[in-house]
Length: 529
Image 1: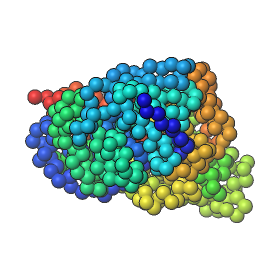
Image 2: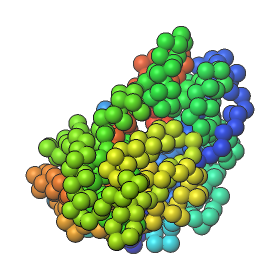
Image 3: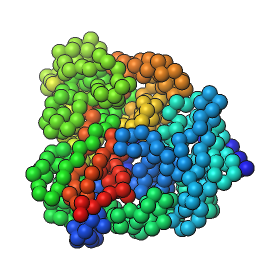
Image 4: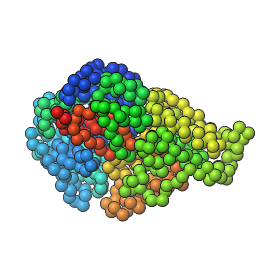
């Protein structure tokens, strides 16, 4: 029996990948177009790392790795490396998993319980730069009981814990001899998954081949290429030319393929929202009256209609309108009169140029959005237009993430977030004060004791009614004191050559395209002929 004590600390969840330059996938439609055995997909960004020890694939659907559990098309948990769903005992404090027989890593070595223990132990080690530590805050200890059983002991009952065990498992015999932060495993991973990485040209493409020894059966798609193309228009052009077999596209560009023979459009609902972060330390964006006025000044429905071509919903908070945890009655239409009244009462007076000022400071701040992202650009411009109607001057600028990241603690950003599975998954890292300014976590540096208390109750309570009340309180607090202006929830759009049958999509998080879309289960695809 092997036992390891886990010493985790709360930290951050990185919510955005590096924006990559576009380049030819090196095979393009010639590979994908010839048969159903090779596929080239265009995606806007690539991961920073391919190591689960640093956060890659933590929400599931990695093509290189598997977790103890996975999700099906309806987002229900199902066994993966585990034979069955966990046995839960001790009032929700102990989870026991029995491993599937005969699973091997792609180098031929067998999977054992020690690999699972090593994975979680390393992820939660203070020395590992994994920004997702707070997601496993409940874990007290993980131990191997023989070769095929893994036992998790929690500090407190965590209702959503099983869904956290979609975390990919890595081989101790390879990664255990490396520094998890700098080792070669980050770019040359070995896993149990349906595909094996064969090459990674940063900013250009990642190539994979089918794992012939995959425990779930050998995939029919033998070669998979993910072409990194940051610019939406370029991605659409290359799809139309046949250089790509499929791509993730914004709604307006996906609509241009609607009547194309041989291609099919897929629409996935999501928890993915666009919002403007309003950093507390910014003298204008951090003012509560400014935040409340902006919340009322924006025309969310117009953004859905005009920017998303109807493929989305207005966002009145971080949870979608149709989510069972959504707080009824917080919907609010554009109300410019009320926005102006709030600013008047707070002492923000309109100047001759139409821009308000208070104590000599104009109501002006900069809003950044990532270059090449047309959907965020359009949201930013619409937001600035609506803000100006209330007398607030929002100066919109595009930049790379390398430029934006150092500015996030002080300047507003057109951000994208959203996690599936449980409200704790997305809300804690977005809003808890302990994570303020920690990378992409709590970008607004939001600090609200009532929200912190609600997040704690939602995470630790086993009573569904207590959890529901906590998240209801949280959403209503965000209306009274918004640290973000929530704009829209976006439906994800994909276009793909119609050579495979019965393809599906899942309800998706913010992170999508690389492991989501119709190719979330590419290993199960069957050709049409």
